[in-house]
Amino acid sequence: MPLNNNWSTLVTEFGRSIGLPEMSLGDIGLCRVELDDCTAIDFETDAAGRLHLYCVMPPVPAGSRPALHEAMLQANYVGQREPVKASFGIDPANSEAVLHLALPEAAGESLEVFSQSVQDFSAIANLWCQKIRDNDFGTTQPADSTHPPVYA
Image (cartoon, rainbow, N blue to C red; front, top):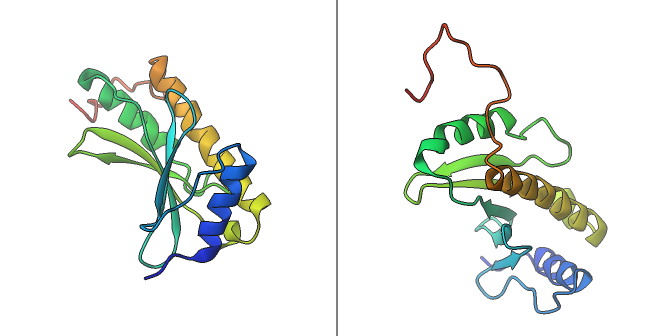
């Protein structure tokens, strides 16, 4: 299926607006933007013409993963933040945590709405990259000593 030209155009225009004139989805509908030494965002179209944003979180030592995974599940942004409906997932094959957002059709209506959606997603990704870097991703609720930990 051919790329949704609107997404392709918006990604290119967004790239220009942030000083990356070479940014484009390319022939296969994929590009990666390195925002800083911690955060890279992948833009990818699917077969149905939707645009997805992904951010792989930095690696976490195995012993810290249960606390990180619990914190991410508690913080999943689906239905909690408007208009960003991003969610965390775990890629067990690569031991990676991934933040994902399928952009709503409304984000494709203008560069302004598209840019805001990408900036909102980027802010969440940056927040979590920093939490991981600072090893500050403990649970948001106090431990209940009457129940064993989920990851015992």
